[in-house]
Image (cartoon, rainbow, N blue to C red):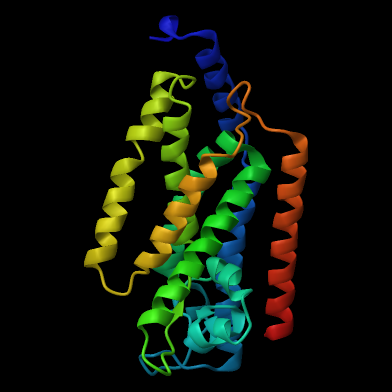
Length: 269
């Protein structure tokens, strides 16, 4: 019961609740970005008259629900073995915002909306964005390295999606729940520590049973998120907020990565 909570736990509850009641700007921007980019790739496919793998021409409706072509995804920054190896590392970050079809983008958008809101309340805007980007890039890097090690010569497989970054948020949440287990009120501790484990296990199980799921990307994001959560400060926990210099440095790095990726997509496309 709340009557048994100590002052620190009560303060953590107050801070989390206050943050969760506000619209999360970074989460909203990220969800909006992946949806807008998905539509842009579809529009690009349609205007270019590309053909879907099933052999029919794209129509206006496919801009919303149709599968994106390999050519379109490659143009917008898909994680391609040969392109990354040839000196286009920006694809590791660009591919996080790309999705193969409507189901793919919808599932990731819903997951990001929920986990992002909680994560933004936990780590604050800048640290949450850094966590998302870092987990996504590390997941894409591990996916690329694994496919490069196993692929035959001339392999043209692509990897896209925010799943690695989303796994990173889940891994970070579990570590946060364990790291601050004494400061968290019992409901929050259960949410972060016990509540996220089943989702991680379920999604990993789906990854090994359903074809064409990027398991290496998921594991890379999960690991990166968990490791970052060991050192990131949290504005929700008194005494663990972290310094303003670290926040400023993270904001600069995030802006640099996003700007570099956007410029590379425009110039490379």
